[in-house]
Image (cartoon, rainbow, N blue to C red; front, side, top):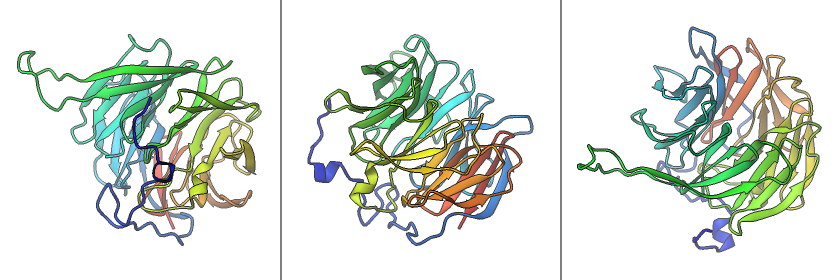
Length: 362
């Protein structure tokens, strides 16, 4: 299915050279930094009631994107200062988004059963894939394999999409761009009726895709051979609503074995840390409140901390090697439903149900 060089020493580890391949800056993540705990900035997203369904930093840590329940996307600078860039066009609440590795594009999905690719600089949609391709809600859109593909789920299967964005204009067809997106292959879960979590790595070459289903299983696919290679039954007492892999970033490096770790979360069942090599739960994290809302999770790029939202108006930070929480971040006025770590610095952004964004630093 793929045709890169498959030397495992080069493709299984993130590309962490002396200079950051995205911005040309030297790696500068403070490896000895403490977990974010100091409130730096707080803003409300809109005057009317809305909230961020999903948030994510760009790979250089300079921008943070928010997908909102009012059908729009906002892109702020990392300090949440100034006016955000506004992306409109979806006809439903934005359910997922992700930055491209080169930080020039955004991909998003919404309750309108469409996937859109946006030019991050002009706020214009450059490609829209709609209801003619997907017959069920589209979720978990993400760039994959160093921006060569897009992964997303619809129903009980996930799609591997190949896209082409034409920078030139066709003068014969009234300057209409010839952008193309087509399905390369679909992958069906064994028994689940719906995919409830999907995760892959885009910052370095990886063939592994993790998919959680409504039947409480988690399946591991190797897209280089194009099939399922493992299944973990009864991952949680309820269906997993988010999978978060330890992906690192271009600003820091970890031991190679650290990239085999991933975290899952489910309503009413805390967090679990897994090792993809032995398919075992390595550690459980409990303390936060998650009885009704699907509160989000994130792993810091240094691999030392896990952040989780909570319904008790706190964000919790756990140390990877300890089951008890390290910090409770206060100042929230509603349930914390989304969290995101900055890949280049010790900074955390949280989002609440009443549309409040807050950033914390160490």
